[in-house]
Length: 244
Image (cartoon, rainbow, N blue to C red; front, side, top):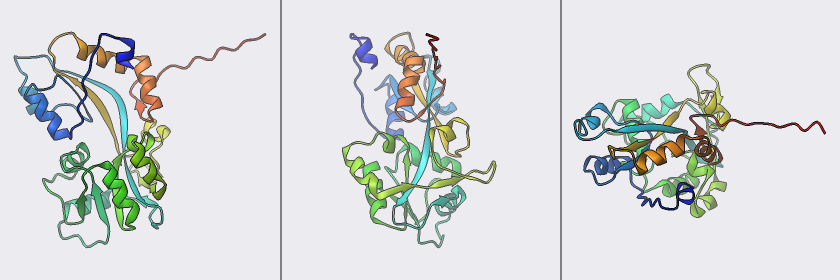
């Protein structure tokens, strides 16, 4: 939509894991990145005295757990996931399935669990499609994916969606279980929410700042909402009543 609006703007997109994206940023191989976190203090040191780094939050994403539709599971406590991740000797018939070992989801759980490696009950697939595929065929598997993959699936994942279901996740705030709906993301009831950021390391006003501003604008936020994510700035909605 940005390129459609600004015909002279040309953007080349590259899909990579979070670790690969960070490495490209630090090597100055890319000037703009979209990741589900801010750069760390150590990462920002790379740019000190060289460039100004702008980090713009533009959407909220939900991390969701999916299981085989025939599975008896419908509820899940994240503490159980962390126990399986942290404890290499955990005795459970459950298998937690992540996408690429370098993905943002894996980094998120490593940070939250405070570990550098996972237990034997964790399986790494090649990509999100393989996570869905594996989970759809195994009653004991619990897949971990970003909500946008299910709200706007590609053709392959769309075919597999009918074989899986989302699990309700326990919230520590009120001890209730919640599905990852837009309303539960908006009010903070769903416990696994992360913000998506546009990282601009151009160091000057240009295309990067333009894209970030567009994504954070009302038009950009409406696109985010339509994509099934939750906008950081809720778009206004005006209702005109015609008395005639």
